[in-house]
Length: 276
Image (cartoon, rainbow, N blue to C red; front, top):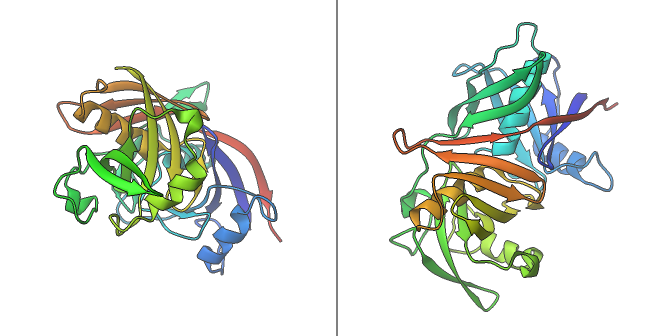
């Protein structure tokens, strides 16, 4: 099996192109094995590159714990760079089928190389039942308790569920403890991604991410989008925001006219390999 290791701001993935090779494997088990950082390749998730009847390609991602999320923002940027680098006639824009619908990454090209990717992430879902949440009528400024601590959160779905907790003292957040408690809270029947946010200004925030199925990651693209939507809705941020995460910076824009969220950031290839 040939593969490519890639990352978007340190959120790393193993990409497997199934258009050019047939792999007879249980991909849930394979993802768990290959993503292990001690006995495998090591990654936050495994991404399958597949043919699509709805777009140019289909992306399926499997988290390091074997769960299958609807979408991954950093993953789709890596996916777009991968297909550009491996196409005979590459394009600057692709339609990619995902579990959250067909999304359109636009690639910034310099001297034949991808130097950045902007993705139209579509419209945020802001209805509690559709995020999904249970026991809540609203997604804004809601209360929840985990580990004996009360938190105020705003929930947003970017095709996958997120909760955003503002005014956090990021270095002191015990993410490895509170992250799993909130991710698996009964209020979120599909589990949830968890984000703690410090607002530096209306156009700049800092975030730590706990990703559903992957744990703490250095970046989360859909999570950065959710944080800006939540920040704008609660009056903390503008609609154009620099989101600083441990792996780098994403530019997020929530367009007032289309209601679509646009994410701009880097995607990097690390190495190619082959498993026998």
